[in-house]
View 1 (cartoon, rainbow, N blue to C red):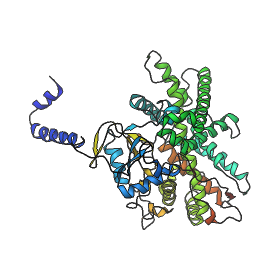
View 2 (cartoon, one colour):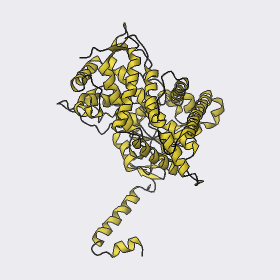
View 3 (tube, one colour):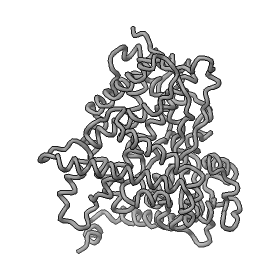
View 4 (cartoon, rainbow, N blue to C red):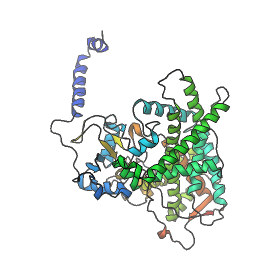
Length: 502
């Protein structure tokens, strides 16, 4: 007898079963595209090029945000022959990512990401590979201290090294991006490799630079054209450079893995790579195991992007915005002096530091590091908010439209920590704060990033005041983001002035 048959024979359940079945049937029906349902509206597309003639491929998120004001929260654009449905505004984006997680849960893998990731790892994988790698990664990161005191100590150790580098500048103007990237990368290295690297280690520095260059390359117009017209790949030099950088970094990681495997003693597991190799050994009898070298190197590279590029860029935005808005910096330093004093900061300090939490949240909102989110794909024909979105359609949740949603932010285009404070100065959450996305594809590095941002900003402002160089006014500091897949601040020099400690 089947489970359902047994269930139905239990006395007293019929009054509940019929409404439940009707509810499930209604839900299934509502998610089917009804006959005659129309696709989302959008601007008229031209043959071959689609809507590319009216889009700024250097600032695609800005063009899409403008179109959302004309065509609504669900609309269609054509990137060449590729049909893309764009979702705009908090309610629509959250509805799609959470309530329609299964229908919009697949990753749409554009040509450049297929070239570089080969559908391995986490970020640009689907199906069983994605589920297995994500589950293993989250579990392993937790084992190595994510969200725990042991990781706090590693972060503070690295920030100590960064503080020393800043101190050596003696208050002179310098561009901190490279040093910040090395520091944040070392935090990931302590988890992935089980060790840190010196800031002048040539192989380590080259690997960071190649990864950063690729992040910039994949957001460039040439790559956008390639994603629309893959047959043009051999003619696009930036694609070849991205592939070269990726292969060199993959070789570095695989070389380290082989050395780690050779030196590993028994069950000694120092980092993520050791844990992966141990799992690989356990499943060596399974010819279909997903714990292979390809998934190892791509997952590690995904972790570096998720835990390095975005965090390093956000810290760069932190320092720039503190120099730009000295009154915010002064108020934050007063809170740091009051709550922390001269001892190292701790994550538990957040409970007493409402202004710090508000400032960090606002920096993430304003900097808008990942404006487009990574592309999703409809796994089935789905009726969403009155429109038919066909199976296989590219779906872009426009995160910039959430972080700039006028219905949820008083001054969406301004840096304003009061977005996260009530009238009494208490910290308040805002539901439209989605810098890490939402749903099953939420960023795996969210917990680590939150820890790094709080500990880094409080430790740095405990020791330094950041100012524009002499002769440069705060008004002259440029908040225009540089071009790339991620919105990093335009490179510019700042001064780190040592504070006299009380």
